[in-house]
Image (cartoon, rainbow, N blue to C red; front, side, top):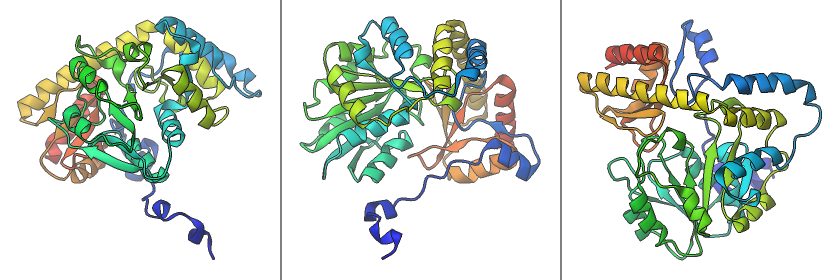
Length: 360
């Protein structure tokens, strides 16, 4: 008997996740400067205050980190006017998603989400062996009526990205209110709000209202996007005490580094940097809207820091051709004819448009 003989069949059937080649590797291979517009990072970088805080802390990295992220939880909880017991610190949103999947893992249970959303939702269903149920998209967004129809007695997790990655669409308060009222007690709703800082719309729901009302809802947020700390992997979850206590039971110890916690504390206090990043992102989106409209390229208006372009042709062919010209973008998961383009600096956006013209 070999090692592969003892690996569960559902694991053997999984294709390993292949991340896009890092920009540095592509630059070496093609001998060209690469514009990275494929990871939805903050092109303006982290807060200078966060960088300075990390520099001042590096002499103190020999000890293990504060396992609970006490000071970060204390600061966030105070600003959100919730209890520290209703918050958990994580290594980004994916870490929290893994906790939730494993906490509710049982034979035959179901995970419900949409056909075109964050790839980790589907990967975790594969690795845990949970049955994945998907609802079709409606105008590139979550169709909550279709999702409600697919809730069964076996549904344990319902996952909604708001705004959605990779389409950039938003679920509005009225429709989410109606959907939440239909969720049975045997299911946990996860609201993945990795991009919520970029939303400027009065109809965007305040998810913390559901938590304060005692609903079985887990809200995911991150410092990877607007705060520019993707390389440090840190985020947080907000829910009821019962949910948070359960997540702690399946959480890996020391899941966030002390450096990440220090950076997040400083970044949180630098509201000017976040506001400036969001403002520049909005200006970048408006620029791309104008230029793409002028070219007759179909795009989906975005509430995040990226844009979905439906080109009506295989997306992988386009991304490969763009890469040869030094521009990294991603095929849009679940939309085979679309690419997802992160909003960059003005110079990066212009480079993308120039390359897209030549490729198309």
